[in-house]
Length: 571
Image (cartoon, rainbow, N blue to C red):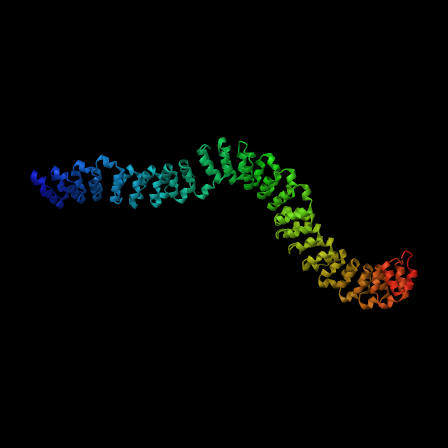
């Protein structure tokens, strides 16, 4: 093909001869005449075999996109021979990059310089090229989506991208999405980039302070984003935006206490105030004073935070429904309830139930009024020593609701049995066997003998104390002591009806029977038949009673009408 250089001028203009030479040696085109060098078919044949042949193509064909693309497809080196109009034609360059499969760095650079989107067609290696990617994202940040993995974690590259297009943050690595500098740059460029921030950064109030400061507190869009995540950000807004009802509503919907920063009479906006206190009860302190008398608004506040009751007017602090709502939410609100309700045992018990017995101060206040309300306290509070002691001090029966470990506490049980001996029934078995405690119980109420440990029921001194307190307690004494003369005499002297549990032998005893009837005339019905038909006994029984005990007289005259002469004139 190189032999064409020696051919005559006429033969150098022969397309067939030139084509044959080019097929042997594409650079033979340099020896061809002007005709073949301007023939597109001949030229295409040459550049498809050697891009170097492009240098010898006539200028008008060098400007032909088909010819230029054919040359560049063969070798990107042809780029340097491109006419200016093609070197600055982004559509052509992108097509060239595609034809080249994005492998040639110079070609991709040329394309990116004209149209950064050309990076999309670059090879994987070139999309991992730091400088190349930096150039691309500086022109179009969204192209970060095409960056190689490690470049998405490169702070410099990502910053270049988000400064050009804030939403490019979507394609950054997770650690850069939580980087305040990167986040600030992204939002500064496009507020909507907030959706791509890492959750950790989105919850950083300090970061939002910087964002708002960056906008001078005047960007409504930025403020909307900020208060939607942290209502407190309203404090950084301009006065104009703090008067903006929509902005303030967004802020108090996220954090009711942001109401404190509202201006322009928005504290008197009922709908806005209701949203604020529903979100955060203590926002009640920032509302127009007139609303402190509004039951709907106050109740909405205390349902969210019971202690918001402190800001309500006196009338609502004494309102049963409002106070109950507050205490149900937080028992600590009891200190803000009107005194009249705090002294109402029924109301306080209802409040403890509504509170599910969770709050200690409330429970303490309630059991101090009615110890039995301990039944409504939580298991944890039923195991609270001070609270249970207060409950049993107020009502012995509260011991029934104390936790097992406190029913084994001597001080707690002693407090209960000091009021009512039979409270011993709820004491732990170990304490029922404590003689001193058992003695205190039966001395207060002899019937507590039923609940003392079995071994103590054989204790004569303890049984004697029990029957002196309540004669019928003899029923719980062992048989041996029910036949003990002194014990029996003490029992029937305390309660004549105890005669019914006395042994048969002692019921025949005249002294025992006389003591029983003397104590209670109705006991005559329990006296042995022989004595009930004994006039002397009847007269003595009536004499002991002064003939004024109606029950005894009635029983006696039924047995012997003649004893009526010994009866008092009144009967």
